[in-house]
Image (cartoon, rainbow, N blue to C red; front, side, top):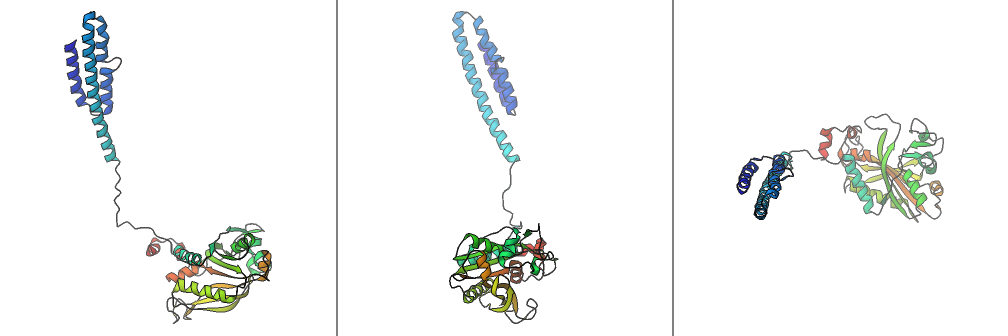
Length: 339
């Protein structure tokens, strides 16, 4: 029996070394140490030996089992490490950064939007939002726009139903803010708006606005002028000047259009400003008393100013873009200039 076990051990040692994978090794292990394995069969035969030989035979078989289990364990560890290394090598991902790969960047509109928002937030304004699908009340009536106003005609506004439309101005956010918060109020409301326009170099059916509102006691046109002068200098440069021109908006009285000196020619006259030296940048005015009343704010106690600017227009002026359609075409050759 001792010779038989020695031969089995030597043969298994040789076979274990030739196993190339864990499956082959496990099959060999079952064939030697399993319930029907060769060593197990030898162990079962011990019962047929004379009583005085059984202890020695049992010791030999147990020592052989310990030795063989150690051999299988060592080879198994080596094969597992080998298979792991092969798997890691086959699944390796090169994470080395290729410096020649183009990086993404902010859209020019977002660059200007962030610049504008950061400026007003630094002055204590809060940023508010409002639904893009809006009730007519917030888009028109609360803003003192009567039913016979041209803006309420179907050729100028996208109506979803008789009483619901796509907002045509972010001023709707001002109404919602004044309904919820009582003065003092300092807020801006940036977002998309919709008008029934055919797209061309200066028009788009969807564009971006930013509205501002300040309501408090003793607010005057001088406060509005001071804010807008700071705004123009922040966006277009310290040498920028602004001028007010009388205008009309239903939700402000008095109302003004605001021009800034051209950021490209600095007032000398060029193709961007059409030779005038000035570019219109926004509309503004003192909040109409009726608008304050609609929001349950006493116009005899509080006054305010509001302004609204087209962010697409400011973006085009800021970056020297002459066609309003270009930023929306997603031409990589155009967008990569702003990376």
